[in-house]
Every structure is written in structure tokens, then in C-alpha cells.
Length: 426
Image 1 (spheres, rainbow, N blue to C red):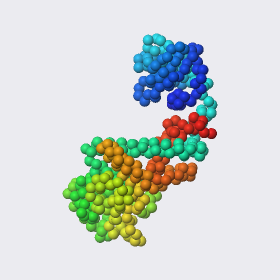
Image 2: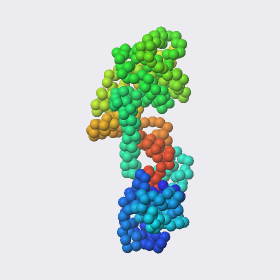
Image 3: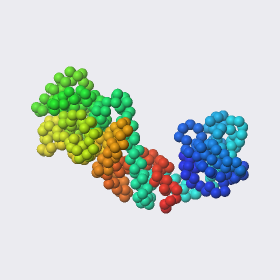
Image 4: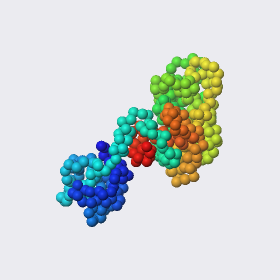
């Protein structure tokens, strides 16, 4: 038995509440179980419990064994003097308040169905990608819909918290922080960190001074990324090196170690060199990108604003000095949709929250509803379990569910787990 499970059982009254008798043979009736306390002190506050003929109002404390009260130091802690009932799985000793008065104790071990305990054990011991994967087919669509909506908001709140933290550390320079986040997005998961380091070493205010010169922007991007610090042979590469030597001295720039960039297990179209060329093209084609995007309520128009084509050199290259078959390297539609889902929407939501603009927050949610579902290993696994997604809002919800709940076995905090454990489904 885990104390967290006991909290869950008490909070949801998942035990037989009829004819309750305390360890001292006093009749107990639960009028109100109280509210879960997330701070220091008793587990549940504002409870109302009738014990014998007296109605008590106060706190409820929960332990596996009654003696845990002493082990946790509550005997000498006056914060716990307002406890009106001690709920336990097992009883070994009586417990008392600081003034010596005895606290009534209720043992619920024989009041909980074995079926619930068995289901919880199966979930905790499951090695499946999703602990309850074998029962997912029993969950009704209404439960899924409500839970996905909540999960999506949770994920957006988590992302906006990261945005606000970065803003607070940088004097609320929205343009600059958007630039850093979109850079990280360009790196995909495998090169997110070096892309973020690039943006930190190459501030938007600096690179914007050269917004009308693509060659100089590329020189700055590839130079700070570390790709111009090695011998290069063709004319384009040498021109970049020449430009970067001048700009590096002018701005006292520091470049990354080229070994930070990962090429392994990547399709050539996602090589960091190609992504950097696309990033440079977006900067060149965009002026005040954040302002334009955050105020634009049309998804297609925003996608057009994120579209950019690198210089002609990259039509025939994936790497410096290594010609390849000709193919334009525009920022692909899938990449644009990914940027909208993971950067544009969170920034719209954060900006709306900052300015108390509900319409902007709703516009962010509308973007997710209209944007196609993402495709990655987690989403494909959900699909194999029969959980399909219609848009990127739903895939974001499923990512939140997997990463924050399923992977951490937080089944007690999950609406799906609640349905299973409450015996509402087989």
C-alpha cells in the first residue's frame, strides 16, 4: 500500500462508507471528506465528520500505519492539532494531539475492494508503453475529449511558463525570446541545444543589422555555428569565411564547437547545415517576425510568413563542398506546421495571457485545431493502440499524457486511470 493511493481512495471515497466504526467503537459518518492540501500540514482541510453524536469540522490526516503519526513528528506539531480524524490502512498504536487528547482513528483496509487494489498493482507493475494500454478501448469518447482538452491546456501552460521565465530573465524582449525559441525549434529534438546556443551567441539585435544582406546573415549563422572554422574549398564557402572573419572581429563573436552538431540518423533534408541555411533565409525574409505573427489570426498567412528559401548554393548541397543532385531546400510544410504548433501557438497563448487577451488565446487554440496532427514515435504508438488524432491540439494532449502521466505512472492523477480504478469499466 502507498500513502498516495490512500489519499486517492479517501479523496474519491472509493471505499464502503456505510456503517463506519472507529477503532474505539465510535460510529463515524463522513459529511464532507475535505479538500486535498498541497501545502504543509494535514492532508485534507475543511472536512466535516460526525463522530458519535458530535459534528466535527477540521482536518483529516492519512497514514499507512497509525504509528506513522509519531514517525512524522506530528505529536509535537501544533499545526496538526486541528485534526479531527486519523484515516489509516493499519492500526498499531493510538495517537494524540500536542495537548494529549486522543484523535479518533478510522481503519479502511477492509472497506476497499480487492479489485481496485489489483488494478492499481497491475498499472504500477506494467512495462507497457502506456500502463493501461490493454484497457484503452473501454474508455468512452466523452471522457477522452474532456481529458484531452485539459491536457492541452496543461501543456500550453507548461510551455508559456518557460516563455515567461525567459522573458523575465531578458527584460521582456519578446522579439528576442521568440527568435531564440524558434531557433531551438529549427534544431528539431536532436539539434535543439546547439541551435539554442547559436541564438544565445548571436542575438537578434546583432543579426538584424544585416537583414538586407543574405550572404552576411549566412556568414554569421554558419560562422557562429562553427561550420566556417574548418578548411573549405568552393567559392561560396570561401566568401562566407571571408565575411565571417570580418564580422567576427567587428562583433567579437564566439563560435560553437562544430562537434556539437549531430548528423547521425538524420535524413539529409534535416542535416543541421540545411536547417541553418533555412534559418538564415527566414531571418533574411522576415522583419519584426514576432509582431507580424502574433497579430495575424489567419493560419495560412502565418504559414506563408514562415516560408523561406535558402540561397541557390543549397539547391545542390546538403554539406559544404559536397555537391548533390539539385533540389530546392525550402522550409517544408511539415516543418512549418511543427513551428506553428511548438513555437507560434505557445507564444500567441503567452502574449494573450500577458495582455489578458482572451481572443488571442482562443486564436492560438484555433491554430492547433486547424493544424494537422503531428507524426512522431509517441503519436504513432498511440495510433497503434487505436487512439487517433484529428489535429495538432490532440497530438499535443497525447504528448502531455505520455510524458507527464504515463511515463511517471501518475495513474491516480489521470482521468483514464480514475475511470479504471473506480470500477466504472471492466
